[in-house]
Length: 154
Image (cartoon, rainbow, N blue to C red; front, top):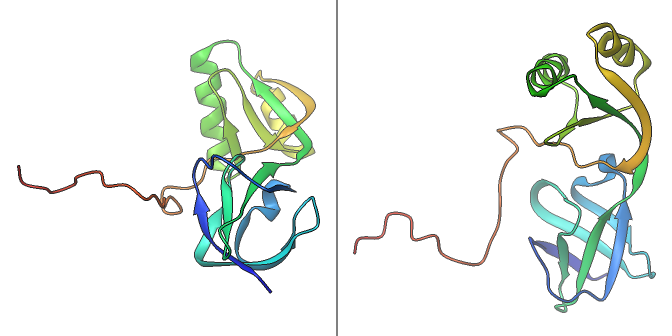
């Protein structure tokens, strides 16, 4: 079986796509089938959160683009920026996965959390959207194929 062991941040050309929910994009090793029927083994060195738009490079050089599947979510908004920051703090304090954007926070459906947020004055609306939660500070790793010039003497 062909393997994919490289994640490409911004691939140019892709031969296919694979559409996955957020919970299925946090992986290290799993057999997958692309939207077009290419079966492959995802075999990464470490667990990686696959973001919408990234590519998985197969052993033969072909690239499959990762797409975030739309799922049922809550869209959380506040009265103003400060209120939204306070709501983000409460969401984070409960260790919930959150897709934090400039004017809203997306979280997975949880009626108890919804009631808490509404009690804090948030506007909470059920929507269908791609979910790209922020990864924790200790989960952040990136791979790239260029030099940043760190520590180079000139």
